[in-house]
Image (cartoon, rainbow, N blue to C red):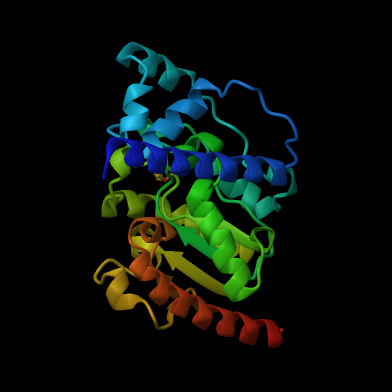
Length: 272
Ligand code: SF4
């Protein structure tokens, strides 16, 4: 691939990510944004895109500047904070300054979770990515856009009907999976959120969510395509949407998993 082609592809991905974030802001009621992106936002975009990407490399800040950006990061309140039930609010208060595991030092925000207090479907993702860490919301950027499409087209639900949360609440450096120790230390918050929301169905995307909810012994590949249980709630496991962006051949298995999810969702909704 020529340098120009690669630049065009990278730029297109960057535009798609920016567009998705702007739509996300709009859905949160934000109508105006500063013309110049904040340093936090720019740093997160560079990190999400990978620090070795050509486009990012040519626009990289000096190490000293990057350090300043890290120090400038400011926590934000989770979206929907004022509507949280007392039970969820208690979990948020307990987790917002958590330092139980080593991931605390990587984060800008504890990614608490967003969605209705009584959502029937809970979607659990991996550890927060760079953009999610800055935004304080799960499933934003291109991954969020893909999730929205999948939920909408296959399950018939919009993002606002689903509770979105992560397997661990703080960013893992370098996009590595969270360690089992980190997952074990964070799972109590997730368990309490599940108790507070009492979803009828849970969908786990990716290895971290699966290890938190189903167990650590088997891979997503081995566990997907059939139902499991957590606190007597049916749980389905599938590949992380982030994985699909790099490996489109997994779209078909995920589509099949979501059809299973849609059938179960209709079943439990009908039983209410
Ligand atoms: S990942 Fe979970 S357990 Fe670890 S510091 Fe963050 S909130 Fe606490």
